[in-house]
Length: 119
Image (cartoon, rainbow, N blue to C red):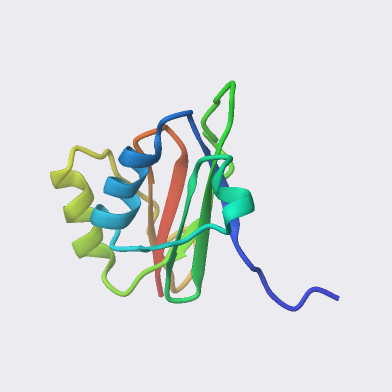
């Protein structure tokens, strides 16, 4: 029986770690988690914030996830949207589609789709 979700993995291209750290660490305020040494040699990086854990794994050839996506719960959707727009991100609001939930979609610097929700 499934009791929870440990993490979500999203692909990044070879050498994308500095960009990932800037976006996920700085722009989104997630904390980087040290990868176990046996996995660190594969590249990529891991992040967490609250109960959300995200693994960014190097994939070659790289292809961004345009439809599949993680959905992050946030405390201030408007502030995050403004921050990402200031950084040049395109935001697509989807309010009203899910009763009681405000949300938007955007893409990370690699073209992976992301969703952010506030209830």
